[in-house]
Length: 183
Ligand SMILES: C[S@@+](CC[C@H](N)C(=O)[O-])C[C@H]1O[C@@H](n2cnc3c(N)ncnc32)[C@H](O)[C@@H]1O
Image (tube, rainbow, N blue to C red):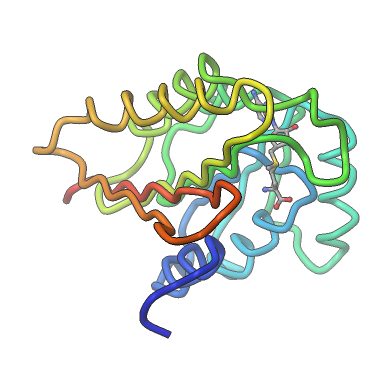
């Protein structure tokens, strides 16, 4: 499949690159689907950290992941504390609210951008950051605008920044932003 029509197809293509043994961060754990994907991506020699502000998210993710993996740690903390990790190779943000839970608890512009700013600094050279942005829920347009402004401000000498949109889809499809720290 060359042209994608679902955001996760873009994410999966990135994660199919060789990240074996690397350090990954799921900045928005939610139900844990991305955390589990990251665990499979980095393999047994890698490590995955996760952040979420909802206890329910941390519990759901642990249930989803099960006993098979030991190489991960989930923090019940806001991702604007992401710099408690000092370096990483892969970061994913799946913005918005937790599917199946309260739509009132969402990521918000100020903490998202603060976190991304820190994430770009702890990202190792050659590292990748993936940001999936949805709109429609509370504060979402403001958040996307802030995310875009931040990403546009990244120095092109040090970062490549790409924006992937599904131009002919109805109902506000997500946008995927891809960031690579240059070697
Ligand atoms: C769209 S969901 C993530 C979906 C998830 N990655 C999955 O695979 O199911 C967004 C998550 O971000 C969390 N969140 C909101 N604000 C946050 C913050 N400041 N720091 C970390 N997580 C946050 C929400 O609690 C919610 O679980």
